[in-house]
Length: 334
Image (tube, rainbow, N blue to C red):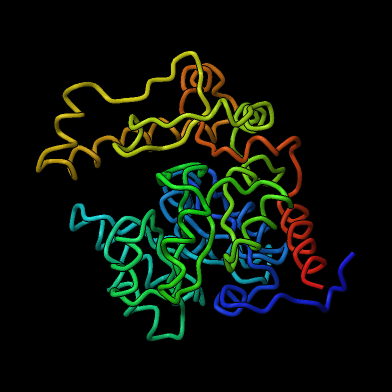
């Protein structure tokens, strides 16, 4: 076992203030406070997902963050989905970011929009912003917007996924000079070490942390991850209008109705995606209801997961998973 005093020192560990360059990514609806705390306690950093915290798990955001602080004193991060949409939503997200900053969070992951205004807020307090990207084009724009690192979402990711492999993404983006985090297909030590060997500063993991004792999603969801292989993973646009990886079921459908497909390719695409997102928010909220088995059975096609299911064979503690993976990196480095 690695010496507890040993650390990995790179851009991500310095920016996040953690031992290990591993992010437990923000997940809707699965980022309950207990999971966030447990993953961060293991030595990496877990990301608060504010819509999940407030809409699904019923916490006022500030009180939810304070609750996490009672469970761990380790650093936690914050996820800001900043896609162009209603002014009301962006105003709420801006207020949430302010709360996160006031509560001492200094590591932010942004998605689906222009992060320049988030960078301005966060940099004023000495914090760092990493932005989700899927290709060189958006990576370059993110650099221009002032981000401190890039979350490189590849074609093995759960949730929203990119078109390219982890190798291709690294080759296309690494010369921009920003820290790169591999997101997608990381569920075990071997996959983690592969990403680091390629040149990534760290990894972001989601699917592996759903199949944990601290995640309070329905047990059917966790079991589906453990039982699935990577061949069971497919993408669908039915949840948000853009491709999301899910575990296939008998009711799986790849695309939306012809009407929504038309709207998603029109000037009304942002409104169409808002409608789809709201619908999926309501539907996915059922996954946290322990006594709602009939609804769970109807909605199994919406179990989001990445191809790392191939290596997820048990339901374990998020703290133990984070510690085990992090220490394997320390051992490898030494």
